[in-house]
Image 1 (cartoon, rainbow, N blue to C red):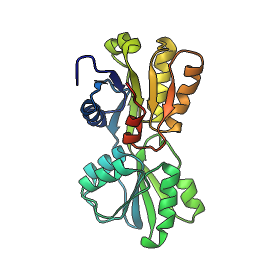
Image 2 (image 1 turned 135 degrees about the horizontal axis):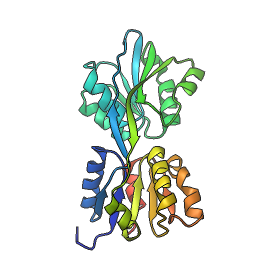
Image 3 (image 1 turned 45 degrees about the vertical axis):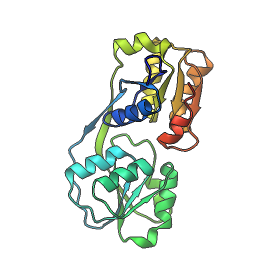
Length: 235
């Protein structure tokens, strides 16, 4: 990475932000880590009697569950490869990945319905980004959602705000982070800043800002994977 490498603002919460920064550096880009979200574990308990499988829609859900519960024998359904990888690191061995969004995850679980007995436990955020329970209920699968963590919006630093127009791009990994950025740009427009988003759902809160000139071009990855997100970046 040279000193003139394009700077890219990473808005995702730690520790994911640091992992993204390392990958960007390896690509010759200069990461600016200043999360717009902070992840906090919530107190929770659950009776696993009658639970046949676990469904994780984020790495944060895996981490929060693994820190609290020792059970690793249940089959795991993960929303994507990164979440599946963390589940494997946490000690789970029976893992299926949807490699998509919440709708793809629901379809995956329904397709494997004969592989487990009981309800699906969904350790989730206090404000889940998507509805997993409804499509599973339509498939006759009981889902129990429990909040194991919350994402709290945090303000960017004064240094980041001052550098907005000199940044090459900003990366958004969640709709909540995108909404937080939209609130920032309402007061601090950055028409030269490009926004690269993990999915169309993440991009949605920013489209209007791009149209009215408070933000530059907004692009969404064709697949909700970080590798696809990086493919959008063209210095």
